[in-house]
Length: 269
Ligand SMILES: Cc1cc2nc3c(=O)[nH]c(=O)nc-3n(C[C@H](O)[C@H](O)[C@H](O)COP(=O)(O)O)c2cc1C
Image 1: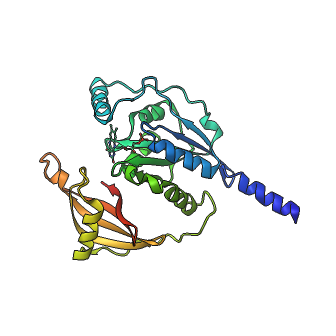
Image 2 (image 1 turned 135 degrees about the vertical axis):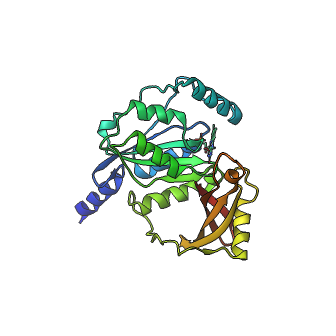
Image 3 (image 1 turned 180 degrees about the vertical axis):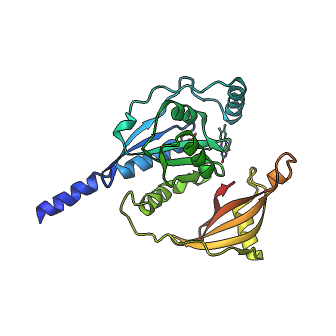
């Protein structure tokens, strides 16, 4: 019996594997949000972890970084990264983390995907963002690494980093990387035309967030780990106001935790 208990402990201790799969957490972070998520992922998974290191780091403020990126795009210059120490061949699943810049992964990741071959590997994208970008960036990873399998990813708003450890754990449990309190994933109900009370919830969550100007027209609900989650379909007014872009429908996800707060968790464009 002691031997069985010991074996069970070893199995728990070898958390860097999902089944027999070996996991690496590889990430870039400019201001520390993605770094914190990466460290939380690696801690829970007991996985190896490595940060991408740049030849010429983006160390300016937000506006300076935007200007430098624009310049690099105009000059077609690539953001040089130092060779990674880990050997990708040694791993089965690579959790790849980044901040969302201009709707997709930040430029150091473009260089990573040009330099390294993830063929035959499983990639779990994870990112931090102001409002969203997991879905679009995951699509772009699939385009740059067509022979890798892109698994469901994780994304969190920079504004919600205080509850990041809870969200990371929930993600790892639901996707079966670690054991934990079983949380039954529930599907959203069928969407219905938005009601006055739901519009209030939407407005509370979005407030005057500067990068989001949308008109919600329907809502769907589900319960999510003790909270209520809404998915609002909305017309993107940022686009409508821009004659070069057709008005588009976006999804805005909102989490209502009674007695705590009402926040939007991501925007899917
Ligand atoms: C140049 C730049 C572009 C950005 N573009 C977006 C964007 O398109 N969408 C978004 O939701 N957030 C955007 N952000 C916000 C970052 O994704 C967010 O602050 C992130 O948490 C930073 O991660 P880090 O601390 O790991 O660097 C941008 C930030 C910078 C500096």
